[in-house]
Amino acid sequence: MARIRLAGIAKRFGAVAALEKLDLEIADREFMVLLGPSGCGKTTTLNIVAGLEEPSEGQVFFDADDVTDTPPHRREVAMVFQSYALYPQKNVFENIAFGLKLRGMPADEIARRVRGAAEQLEITHLLERRPSQLSGGQRQRVALGRAIVRQPRVFLMDEPLSNLDAALRVSMRTLIKKLHRQVATTVVYVTHDQAEAMTLADRITVMRGGVVQQIDTPAGIYDRPRNRFVAGFLGAPQMNFLTGEVGPSGDSFRRGDLSVALAGRFAAGHKTILGVRPEDCAPAEGAAANIEGRVTLVSPLGSEQHVNLAVGDTELVFRLDKGLRVAPGDRLGLCIPRDRLHLFDAASEERLDGARP
Ligand SMILES: Nc1ncnc2c1ncn2[C@@H]1O[C@H](COP(=O)(O)OP(=O)(O)OP(=O)(O)O)[C@@H](O)[C@H]1O
Ligand SMILES: [Mg+2]
Picture 1 (tube, rainbow, N blue to C red):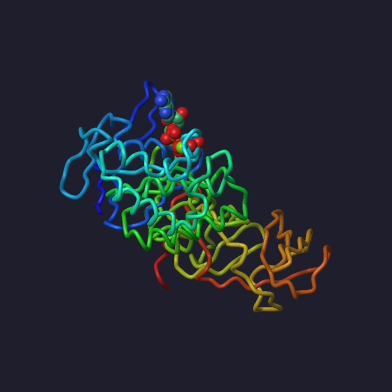
Picture 2 (cartoon, rainbow, N blue to C red):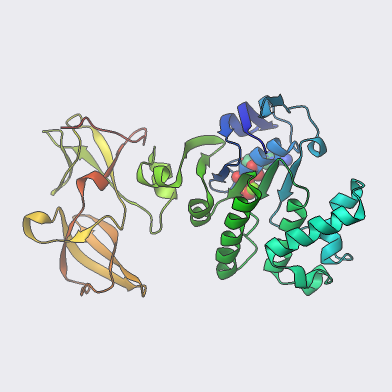
């Protein structure tokens, strides 16, 4: 078990700055997800925690120990990768046992640990098989088993589910979450899948271009994104964005004919971006509707429907109840609660929190 602290970590590969001054604290037993688009520095961060990459600047601590110069095998971390990296000639038992054998652990202790992990992962019936005789999901369970039996201080996982099909990813996600409860070990988990991040994480670190954008709980990130990038990265369909300005009285957002009342007070005339999540709306009529437009597209999804609405010169997407009768060409009014609106500075794209009126 360990608390991890990255202090002022920078990593350069020649002219490429993969990480710029990263400060990150991960609590003991926390499930921390590193989330961000391709190339943002997730794997590099994980490799620095593992000791597989040396930082250009800064230090890595496990609890009070400075492990910056400690080699990987002495850090007591276990890594699970996207590729399972199993030994094809060895059976499942031997694959899981391999690391323990190398360390000279007595055979009966090895057998006890392998059987324990196999039970947790529900692969006891597969112990005699070779990797080639397993499905992708089963192989990834073996890779997890190999990490568990080592009883590491820290689990590091780099997109472990990205080779699996959608349904299997969801069931493996549940398994990993349960496993984390059972082993009660610090986990750093890399993904670019926002649904995976939201469901697994105690906290999420959103990264972009080697720079941390926000560190918060899944709800904190989703409900109060610090900037437009974070707001757009989490949520499907994406948050709607409208560029405009704050009205003369400071408590509304204006864009052409559209005027939407805001929950706070802002500088009049300030150029801003309004953010509206597709689900933060309810059908409304007359004065209760603060957005109105013409329906351009209806996409039924079974559980709900996505409705495209032309509002002035822009098109917004909303998630609505499947029972709502609506067709292209209809006029539709929606009520968007003021306290669900997001406002960002148009230039810096940082979140604006207005003074309470
Ligand atoms: N060994 C290397 N040499 C040069 N540049 C590298 C090296 N490893 C990574 N980089 C660069 O550093 C940046 C961060 O890479 P990293 O692998 O950490 O991204 P990532 O967030 O894991 O992306 P992905 O989601 O595609 O796996 C990228 O611009 C990448 O090209
Ligand atoms: Mg990566």
